Amino acid sequence: EAGVAQSPRYKIIEKRQSVAFWCNPISGHATLYWYQQILGQGPKLLIQFQNNGVVDDSQLPKDRFSAERLKGVDSTLKIQPAKLEDSAVYLCASSLGAGELFFGEGSRLTVL
Amino acid sequence: GENVEQHPSTLSVQEGDSAVIKCTYSDSASNYFPWYKQELGKRPQLIIDIRSNVGEKKDQRIAVTLNKTAKHFSLHITETQPEDSAVYFCAAYNNNDMRFGAGTRLTVKP
Image 1 (cartoon, each protein chain N blue to C red):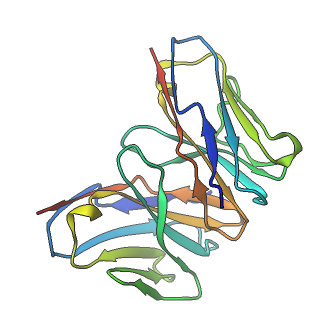
Image 2: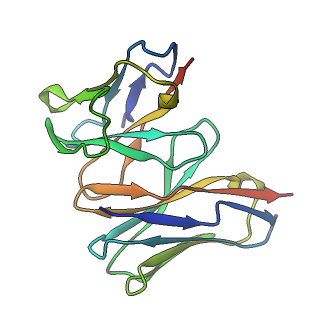
């Protein structure tokens, strides 16, 4: 079974630039999560989708972050404009809905 | 929303000793408690989990206990090995909402 795919694995940008991350969940997984993991901290939920609808985006900084999940499969997370404090690993995870999350390898963002 | 606290933040043990990591949660409706292991530069991977209708679960050298009344759960690793060195995260899940603790960096010294 293929796992959660994410790209790019690494991205370096300057502050005020924009960046987009892509996630392809495990086939059949209705629930998709984007987490932000700052170095030395636990994953922090940014947004959660159930199929193509948003379940929870209460911790998403909506002035600069946006996410979509068209057709209930792939998802993209965008940051525009980026700030220094956005440097982190962005983890995508998917779930059948019974609890267990399967994580992708993550996209490491460095903002200079 | 749910708040998960995890202790200690770092833990160092000698190979062969036991390691215990503890977590508390705030939402009594949480019903699923997984533990993830994350090696440096890798994705978090599920190592064991427990649901709220069970008090203890064991898988070889790893065990998890849950006290619903006190709203805390713990990870126990026995006979630790150097390859157990990693960051461990607990999490609490309720109604599609998974919240993580801050993590414990476990170092097993040979």
